[in-house]
Image 1 (spheres, rainbow, N blue to C red):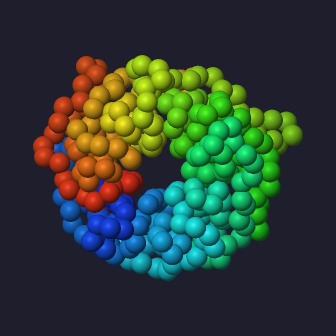
Image 2 (image 1 turned 135 degrees about the vertical axis):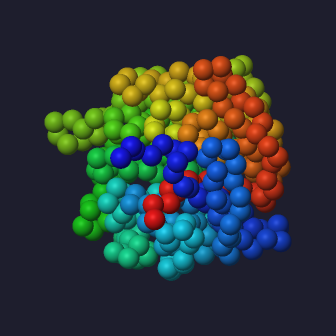
Length: 359
């Protein structure tokens, strides 16, 4: 039996958004995805406050979300709908990023406002258990304001499930911790020092875990690192490439935002807030290096996230300030991005996750 292509599979998309000041109590919306047409249709919505980030478990059975009161867990049903399991406190200010380890035993929450990374145990049923560790990042930055104190913007495990990489936007560094898989405790292992005032924002690893991609908010670049574990079982990161996400240097008011891989890990997508562009790069799976395929406007303001559809022929941009999702047809060979139908109104969208329906 022939393997299904992306257009033959069924998907839903989960979109998170803020609810403060919008008059809308639904912080997560669920959409049926038409891959062939590159469009989405709303099918359901979930009551939750200020869902600033969502993540899917590695087994793709559960969805986790930030909320004003901590973090919430949902079981993903066969039709893609969500059933809430529980809510847990993170013992701090509202988080901005979530991820799990590769065995779905722990949930990591990054705190921008208090500079803290929180580790919570995940139960066998996918619900969230107690906090196992919480670490406040320390230090003084190079400049007053945002770059004067720690701001955890992202936390992701290496794909060998050994180390947690924590992007500290305020301190221009990525702190690397060894995870104890029994206790859920973190231990300092390494520090990746990024360029001064670069502000590392989001992290992604290649499919095989050999390469780390770091998008920097103020430097407006994607830095590529080769990752390995040395003879002493310690992490080693070597920067091998830095690619600018803007065409002209020193553009004011532009900030690179989210970073997402295509489903097949062939393409890496980054969005630029202020310039309101999306960039798509071809990722060489052998060398890890990036080649820019296109950089074009997204017909909206402040794209907090952008993602390719599973067929790599369509793209959606989540435009936080214009309260829209805009859709495009993509031609990688020609380097074009063409508007694909009308925008969809969503108040302050933040993050999108595609989920394949496997019933």
